[in-house]
Image 1 (spheres, rainbow, N blue to C red):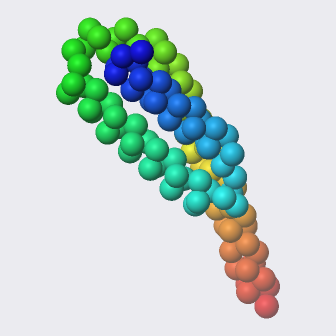
Image 2 (image 1 turned 180 degrees about the horizontal axis):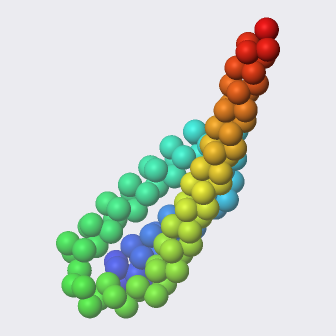
Length: 110
């Protein structure tokens, strides 16, 4: 196995780690998990830059199929998490607005 293949295997492992960490995110452990995910993403970016500077684009494109799908799945997982939290924010905002309206109504009735 040459150096490029070895680096691609490391990148694949990082992608799997990021993906599994995203699967484990909950509201309770979000802060601690997201820190690890961000660190791994930054490591992934630095490995990518290193490979781009070290190898020709044609050599790197050979591995595109192996890396594209996991990267897209991670992007989709991030999108799903953001959508879930946005939905929760909208619901909480709606409930806060209802509470505010009830307070105003109670004060008006007095």
